Structure formats: structure tokens, C-alpha cells
Amino acid sequence: MRESDLNGGIASSGGAASAAASHALSVNNVEVIYDRVALAVKGISLEVPVGGMVALLGANGAGKSTTLKAISGLLAAERGQVTRGDIRFFGREINSLAPQARVRLGICQVLEGRRVFEHLTPDENLVAASALGSRQDLVRNRERVYTYFPRLYERRSAAAGFLSGGEQQSLGHAPYLVAEIFGIVRQVNRQEGLSVLLVEQNAIAALEVVTTSYLMENGRIVMHDTAEAMKRNPDIQEFYLGGARGKNFHDIKHYSRRKRWLS
Image (cartoon, rainbow, N blue to C red; front, side, top):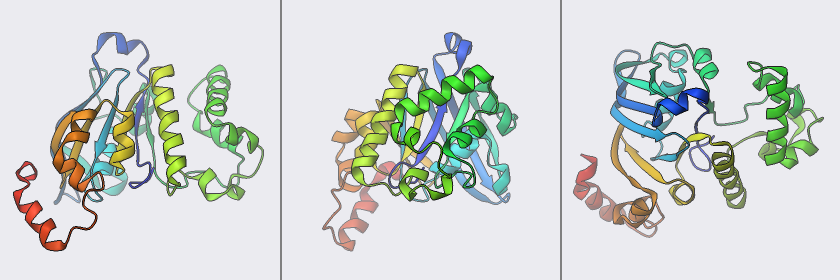
């Protein structure tokens, strides 16, 4: 999902493992390098409680997408690798696991863009996405998706390539659709007990649905607090909640120099 409307995230369902761990996800002092030279993520740590909903905020290039790929195991395709630290899922270290093994554990990354098989129907796309489960799991999960997204049920037999752009994708939505999708994510979190790491540029929308948030800048976590505290923070208000409108470049440079929590 896109970095300005609904960027995406990691969703997890840990099954029986949840009873033995207080955190669904723990990222501990993780460092990521691309092409063995470009340091993209610089020793970050974050946690998602079991059944919790946590936001990872930051501007373009902050390292949010790289963090997600480190968790889901998709770095190798882009010549990236975790060179330090560990990632734990319900207490289990997963650094060495292949992406498909992480999916089997219950980790799901929602990618940005139009990630559909255009020649298949939405119903067939859902079947493809649920290939790892049993037939009963497929039926149950498909009905669950249609319950949350009734419009998708109405178009279930159409070729996915002929759906509107908004129906295909998770990016570029109008604000009211963003709010609706965020509401659905929160509903799934509450009703299904799904643990969610929501990676988002739209701080206003994200802070309304999560309980805890991390702010990422230049590959580092520079702030961590409750959503309510983040909304009250003057620095967050100034540059992540719309307060920077009307500021001139000199003011922004001055602000950047005094923002010691980014050093």
C-alpha cells in the first residue's frame, strides 16, 4: 500500500504461539544494507504487541518499506540483507527463514500498488492468495474478505484487469476511502485479533486508529510514544500533521537544525 494514502504493513496471526509471547513482532537493533554498501536501516528496534495495532510513520525514503521487507523476507530480491540484529515472531527468530516460510507462520505483508492477476477474477485472485491453507480455510477467509469488502463481492466474477483503479489497488484513494479502509483494518484487528504494523505517511489517519507509533527518519527510529502523545507533540504537529503549510524554506531549515531528536 502506498506511502501517502495507505502505505501498508505487516499483519500477523500467530495461532497457538500467541499464548506464549507478549509480542507478535519484535525487531531488535536491525541493520539493513543494499548491495553490501548502502546502509538503509540503521539499528532500529520496534515491537508490536499480540493483538496490537502499531504505526510506523515517516516521509519518503525514511526506510519504512525496507523495514517491512526485512520482516517479510523480501529483501533478497532487491539485493538487500539484514546484517545485524534479529527479528522475532511470537518469540521465534525468523532472520534465516525464506519468505514462504514466514507466510506459513502467519506473517502477511500488504504490498503497495495494483497487485492483482489481471486475467483472473477477484474470486480467483483470492483463491491464489489463500493457496497455503486448506479448502475450509479458503472458504472461510474468502467469505470474511467479502464481508469486509462488499463491493468486491459485487465484482467477484469480473476480470480483475477491468476493475477500476481504486478497486484494484491500495494506493491513491480519496480521503474518505482512506478513512473507510483504515476503519476496516481497525475492525479486523479488533474482531479477528490480528496484530498489525501499519506503515504510513499519512500521520493524521494512522494516529487515529493505532495505540502506539514509531517515527522513522533517515533509517533510524527517532521517536516512540502513544498515538495520543504523538498527536500532541509540537514537532509532529509541525511537520507530520499539516502544520508546515505556509512555512518558508528558511523556517524549515532552522527547524531542521534544532530538531535534536533526529540527530
